[in-house]
Every structure is written in structure tokens, then in C-alpha cells.
Length: 224
Image 1 (cartoon, one colour):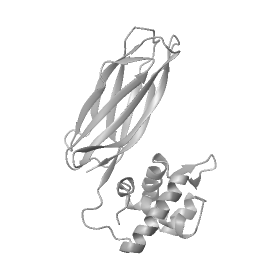
Image 2 (spheres, helix red, strand yellow):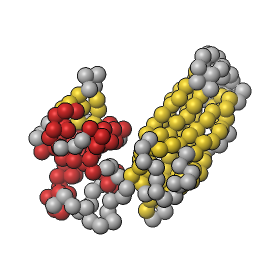
Image 3 (cartoon, helix red, strand yellow):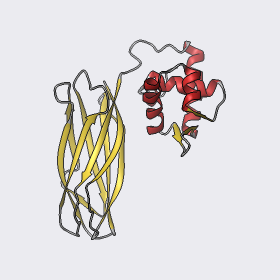
Image 4 (cartoon, helix red, strand yellow):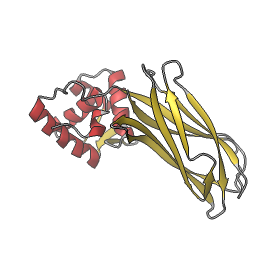
């Protein structure tokens, strides 16, 4: 068998954390317990746990205790089945290197009014190691309570140009007290089919002054 696609995009550190939680039948644990049980360094643990939390396999509470979600429990079952059939060794070419990028939308300060366009900034930049080859993403924008000047961006990221910046306008129509913007990133990974690699949504109030810039972030996994 093969792992579900999203699990193949997780770094090995994340899979090892899930294996550890499943092996000891743990529903929650703190960072020191997980690092001690897996042998991961603080840096490797941080990379693995960040992906698990971002992808909703685990959650973290106010005491910095990490909890398995239902999605995480299902993933452990998939990993256990895979390991039993393959010995836990990925077949050549079955896994991909993944790179974490920060997808950010910046809302400038000011007041947003009905039928008056306001310019927002969209950016993509690596959080750690940049890509070693060129990849292409499709970033789609959707909204309720108005319209956007660009519903789709094509972003080409490469070692020479690891950062992408774009501008677009929002045009509220006044059907709601806020403008809800949804941003989704897609990558063509196999057979020219687009796979969603992450996204976010947020509301921008109308008729209320924003005293300072607002930065909305989502961390996405780009497969190389």
C-alpha cells in the first residue's frame, strides 16, 4: 500500500512523532517527552511539530501540551498499516522534499468603504531553507461581501527568486458588515492535477479604521 498523499508531504520528523504517539498510545505529551521518546533534536522536533499543528494532526494548548486530533489518530492508523506492509521504508520516488513557505496577506491601515477599492499585498517567502529548483503555484482568491481585482495569481518560485510579492484590490459591495477574503494555494504535483497546499480566510471590517497594518499568515508546504 502507499500512504495517503498528504502524509507523504510531511517531513520524516513529523511522521516519527506520529509513530511515537501511536506506539505508546499517547493522546497528549509535552515537547520534552516527545523529543526524549523520538530522539529528535529541538530543531528537528520544531520542524516536525509545526507541520503537524499546521495540518491539524495535532493541536497545542495554553500549557504547550500537544494533543492528537482525530485526523492525527487516523494518520497513525494509516502509518501503522503502511509500516506493517513495508517495514516503514518509503519506496524510491514515493516521497517528496517539502519546503515550508509563509503565505502572507497584508492589509494596510485605513478605513474600507462600500464600492471603494482598497489595495492589499500578497507575499510568499520561505520560512527556512529555500527551494533548490523552480516550482509553480496557483494562488486563488475568493470572497463574500464584495469582489477582488484578481481571482488567480500564478507564482513562480526558484532559488534565484525565492520570494513572490503581488498586489490586488478588494471592492466591498456592502452586503455584509465585513469583507471575507479566502486565499488558497495550489501546486501541480502529479499528472497535472492541482493539489491544495494550504490557505486561509479572514474578515476585513467595513467603516472601521484600522490603526495599523494587519498581517495574515498561513504556512504552506511546497513539494519539490
